[in-house]
Length: 219
Ligand code: G3P
Image (cartoon, rainbow, N blue to C red; front, side):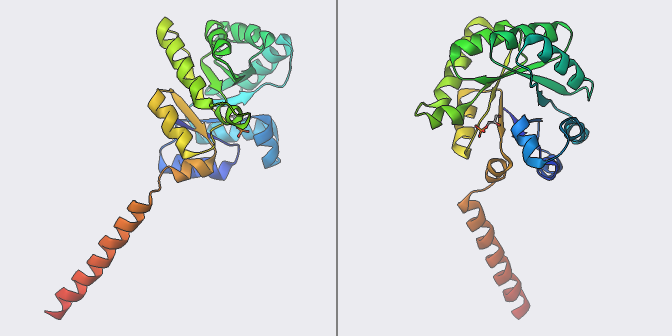
C-alpha cells in the first residue's frame, strides 16, 4: 500500500520525504488555507519535494471551470493530479481531463455507487472519506471494503485512496482490506513508527550494553 501525507505543510512533507517512506501528497483548499500561503506556489513547492502524485483540488462547481483550473494546475508540475468532487459535473470534468492526458482524483466519495461512477469516468484515484463517515455514525472502512470488491469484480483500474484517515487503526484496517493508497495527517504518519515494546526493547538493550561495558572494564 502506498503512503501519502495529507498536508500542505512543507516541514511535515520534507520530514517524511527525508525518511524516504512517502509515495505522494494530497492537499485541499482547507489544508493550504491553514498554511496561509499562495495556493499555486504551495503546490509547486510540494512538487519540488515529492516525486509521487500531488493532488491539487479544483474550486469551480461547473465542468468548464473544473477543466480550466485542472489544466492550469497541471502545468505546475508533471506529478500534479487534479482533484474534482464526486458530482455529475465533476465526473464530466474527470472524463475530459483524463482524455486530455491529465490524471484525476475523484474526491468526497461517500458511497460504493459513487466510487463505481468515478471508476467508469476514468478516475486515476478515487478517495473515500473514512473519518467523515465515522463522524456520522457509519463505519468508513466498510465503504473501502465494498469499493475494493466492486473494482476487483470488474477489473477497474482506478486506485482506491483511503482519505480522511484519523488514526493508525484506520491505516491498519485499510491496509488489511487492500486499499491501494492511504493518505493521512503527519501526526498519524509519525505514530505508525511507534510501539511501546519497541521503546522498551531499545531501553533494555541499552541498559544491558551499559552493564556489559562496566563488567568488561572491571576485569
Ligand atoms: O484527504 C481528505 C482529508 O483532508 C479530509 O480529512 O479529517 O478533514 O475529514 P478530514
